[in-house]
Image (cartoon, rainbow, N blue to C red):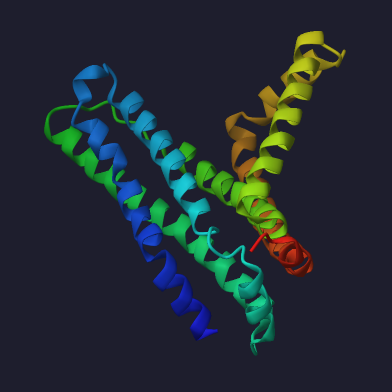
Length: 233
C-alpha cells in the first residue's frame, strides 16, 4: 500500500499541490475589485472559477494509468488492483479537502482585508462553498469509473455523449412542458429550500454523496479488469 501512495505522490504531486493554488485563485480577482460593485459577487465569482479549475485538475490524476501493462502488473501485487483503486479514491478525496481548506482560508483573509478597508457588508458564502465541494466529490465519483472502464480518451468522450443526451432530454421536457405538474413541483422545491428544511436537505445530500462515492469505488473494482482488456496500450 505504501508503494501505491508513493507512486501517486510521485506521479501527481504537482496536481495535488495545485489544489492550494486553486484555493488562492479568488485572491487574484480581489486585486481587481474595481470591476465589481459588490465584494460578495466578487467572492462568489472567484469561488466558482476556483471550483472549475480545481475540478479540471482533479481529473488529470486519472491520466497515465490507462495502460494494459500497468493493469496486469498492479493485479499481480499483494495489495491487488483494489488496493491501488482505494489509494486513488483516497487521493482524489484528499485533493477536494485540501482545496476546500485552502479556499476557506483565502476567503477568510479576503474578508479580513475587506473589513480593514471599510467594507462592512460581507456575507457568509460557506453555504455555497460546502455544497459545491460535495458536488465536486459527486462528479469525481462519475469520472473515475468511466475513465477506468474505457480509458481516459474514450471515457471522456462517452461521458460527454451521455451528458449531451441528458441535457437534450431535460431541455425538451422543459420546453414542451411535458410535466403537467411542473408548478406543483416548483412550489415543492421552493418550500424544500427554505431555512427550515435547508439543514436537513444538505445533510441528506452530503451523506448521499459519500455513499455514492463509496459505491463508485466498488463499481470501479468490478469493472477495472474489463477496462484493462480494452486499453489501447
